[in-house]
Structure formats: C-alpha cells, structure tokens
Image (cartoon, rainbow, N blue to C red; front, side, top):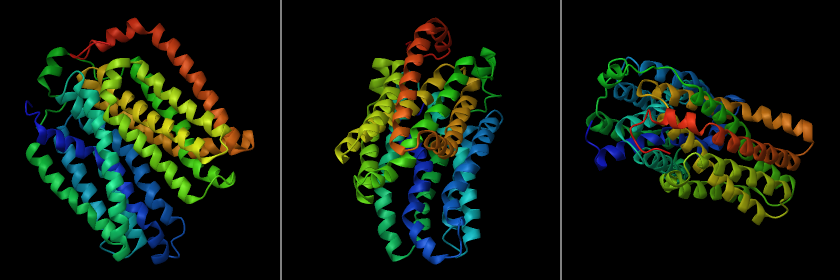
Amino acid sequence: MNNKGLALKAVILLSYTYTMMATTFIIPIMGNLVQVFPDAGTKISMLISLPSLIMIPAILLSGYLSKYISKKTILIIGSVLYIIGGLGGGFYDNIDFILVMRAIGGLGTGLVFPLVPALIAQLYHGNQVPQMIGWGNATGSICSMIFATVTGYLAVLNWHNAFYLYAIYILLLIAQIIILPKVPPEKQDVNVLQAKEKSKLNWLAYIYVLATFVYMVISMVYIVRVSVFIAQENIGNSAQAGMASSVVSVSALIITLIFAQIYKAFQRYTFIIGFAATALCFILLGISKTFSTIAIASVFMGISLGLVLPYLMTNITKILPKAARTTGVSFISTSMYIGQFLAAYFVAFLESMTGSTRTSFTVSGVILVIIAVISVVFILATKKQFSTLYVADDSVNS
C-alpha cells in the first residue's frame, strides 16, 4: 500500500489505456475487414459498437464486485479477458468469431475501466489524485496516437497483426500481478469499517452522473458531425477532417498533462471552464466558413475533453466516502458510455428540428452556455454543502 514509486505509477497509468487502445487497434483495419468479409454488412460496424455496449453492464458489475473482491483481483481478471478478446480476434477468419472476441474484450475493458481511477483515489491523496487522473488520460492519448500509426503500417503486411499487438498487454498483466498492492474489498477494508461509512452515493454524486451524461451527449455532436460538416460546406475533405481530429487530440493531451495544476487553481470552476470551452467550440463551428476557424474550434473541444471528464472523475472520488468511491466511478463511467451511445440520436433530433448541421452546432453552443450559467449559480449556492462533503477526503480543501 505504501509503495507509490515509479513502477506503481507506470502500471496504473498504462492501465488507463485499455479503452482507447481497443479502438486504436481495430480502426486502421476496418477497410481490410470490409474486403475480407464482403457479406458481413452491419457486423463490421458492430466491431466498434459491440464492445462499448458490453462495457456498460461490465462497468456496473465491476463496481459491485469491488465491494467483495479486491480491486487488484478484478483488474487482473479484466486484463486477462481483454488480452483473450484482443489476441483471439486474429486467430480465426470468421466475422462472428471476431465479434465474440470483441465482446469478451469489451467485458474485460468494462471490468478494468472504473477500477483504475478508484485505485488512484485509494492509493494517492491531495493533488496527486487529479494529477494521476490527468496523466492517465494523457498516457492513453499518447499510446493511442503512437499505436494508430504502428497498427496501420503492420496491417499493410497482414490485418491479423492488429490483433496480435494485444500481446503487449501480457507484459502489463505481469506487471499488475507483481506490482499492484492487493487492496482489501470495500466490505472488508478496516478503515472503512471503523469509519462506519455509507456505501451509497450522495446527492452531489448523482449531479455529477447527470452532468457526465449531458456532457457526453452534447460534446459527441462534434465527433459525429464535424467531418460531415466539413464536406457539406466544401471547407475541405477527409484530410482536413483528420487534421481537425488531430488538433483535438493534441489539445486534449496538453490539457491533461497540466490538469492537476488547472484543477488546483480553479477547483469547482474547472468544470465551468470546460463547458465554456465546449460552448465556444460549437459557436465557432456555427459561424465557420474556413478550415482555420474549424481548427480553432477543435482546440476548444480538446480543452473541453481535457478538463470536463477528468474533473468529474476526480471530484466524485473526493465527495464520496471510501466505501462508495468505486460505485461512484462506475456510475460516472456508465453514464459516459450511455451518453456516447445516445449521442447519434440526439444529433438526428437536433438536425430534424433545425434543418442543418450548422444550426445544430449553434443550438448546441447556446445550450452549453445556459448550462454553464446554471452551473455557476449551482456552485455558488452549494458552496457550504460541497465543503461538508469534501471533508470526506483527507486531502486539501477547495
């Protein structure tokens, strides 16, 4: 428990990469798979969507199991499933078999996903928590950018190579077994039992869960429609769409690297800055006529992604007692993926109401401005209640 050296940090940060890397390994070979399985139809797109759907119940299951089983044990089981699902996809040239492997991988990812920030909250204190969560997101972004290129080149030789890259996680699995401390289940944690803490979420945790859902639904409007918008408005082609995506990734990476400093300076208002950045992104997209404006909007989207989700993940561990933190992280994570899944329907609704992608961007921006204003009022009105909840963490006060 006291081993907080570089090796432990490295294992925890690399364990943050599961979700991003699962997508990174599959996207470069989607074109190959369409050619290999010409009659697969919608099963090809399910290679992306199915793991995300499987993750939703797996995340909730992980939060429940952590009350009775050590987080280390669950994380290792999740890693094994992740590796089996990943490597297995390359062993048999059958689209149904690959889908089954992707489902197994999604189950493993879902088990691991909420445990990493929960472990951070359990093993670290004070400003180390947002620092590690920020670094974790940055590690995922860096690995994703590197391996997207590596996977693409290896897939030119043989598309199976994309699945074989999952073998690198065997090394991480060994490191997890050796280095991670075996923290006791929450129902057996002496500190929790002595404190007689409740394992249920408090009112503010549910606000965070709702905020996560709303943020994911609205922010995904950018992800779903920006490349289509660029083509519709004759602003560019797929190359410009790729550049916009890269701008988002780089901006988010920079912000996550300094997230701890931003969080320390602005505390609860970090959330407002993130939402305001999202609003600026959509307002700029609504008036954009050139790619340079879209690039600036993409910078603001990167800032948003680098602030909002790390903030919500950090703060839910700070306003809940230890016995409820894993449950809180699980609810945040589930809300994130449900919001992501429903975003496409929200985009369709917006465009049916507004008649164009451009107007949809503007409406999204206005909605976010209203939410940001309401959030400022909420933060001011609940300052005393928040301080009371925040004392539940033995770190710095806001």
